[in-house]
Image (tube, one colour):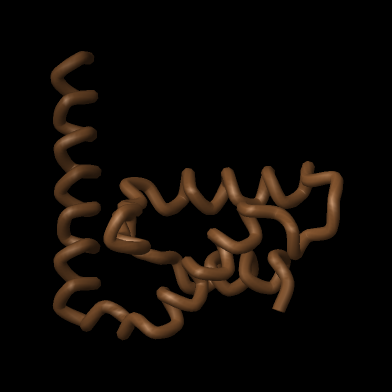
Length: 97
């Protein structure tokens, strides 16, 4: 598996916002982490297997594949929060008018 295949995987299966990668590494924004890995790998001048970002991305991918997908109730709660945020934003925009 290469980094492009992993990128396609995460585009179709977005990870949660925060992830504990190891005991000493917490990822607080997985999208920023992924963009950083992709960019570093793309700009790395040596062999990909010597790029630290490749190994971080690979470890993250393996962890996400092992982690069970969020349950439906968690997805529904996230969708509800998104709807509430959107309605709060529209209310604040109406108040500004």
